[in-house]
Image (cartoon, rainbow, N blue to C red; front, top):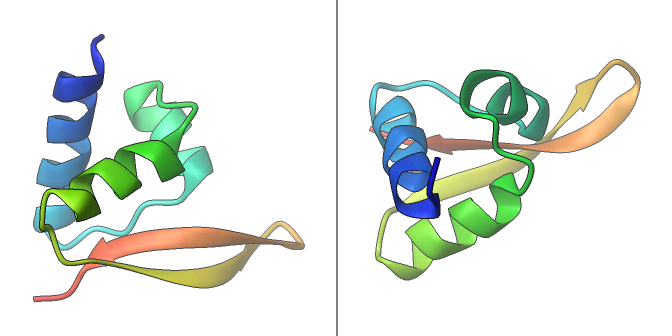
Length: 67
């Protein structure tokens, strides 16, 4: 899967009101570098928000688009 289609799938998922953590992105999209995909999408003007959440005792970023 190329980066553009991976980014497009991630963006579509977020636009549906879902949030995404790096672990979720790996399972759903095979994306090992979610932070890089999010950075590119933000650079393109998409209003993606991030917040820290705790998952299995570790703090990770969770990304979403507020409606």
